[in-house]
Figure 1 (cartoon, rainbow, N blue to C red):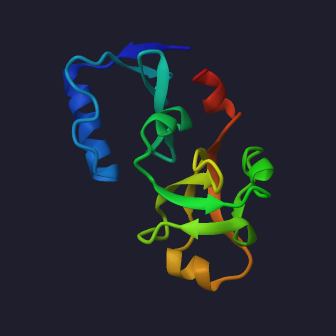
Figure 2 (spheres, rainbow, N blue to C red):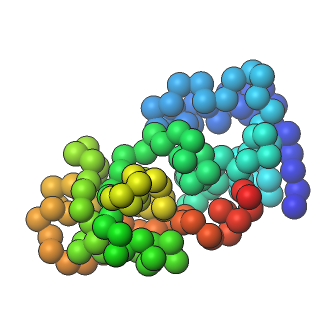
Length: 154
């Protein structure tokens, strides 16, 4: 895998992108060593923190376990085995949704018992639409525990 150290200018651009996407102010400071791995993964201190999915920076679960800044969709414990195998999140398994979730938002899929992120997904509906519906796919699973990105970050 090809690793490239990012310049201060590149880090500044990365911070700008993170602020625009997630409202995060100066995620990386001047003391951070930040690298790109294969032009796809952003890492610091040997941990992959973000990856590109469809030209959009997506936080990894390793980062979200330390600092979750995404809106949440909560699933019941019966859905957990399916989510961690990469299944999309279906309406019957959802027990809670943050109030400001909109269609197209990246969300952290968390379990109802431990409230820990199991997956990162893209919401296919707003919270209001999810609550009204009784069945169907609600969140597209982009990254989950045990997938390639998770295993690269170990």
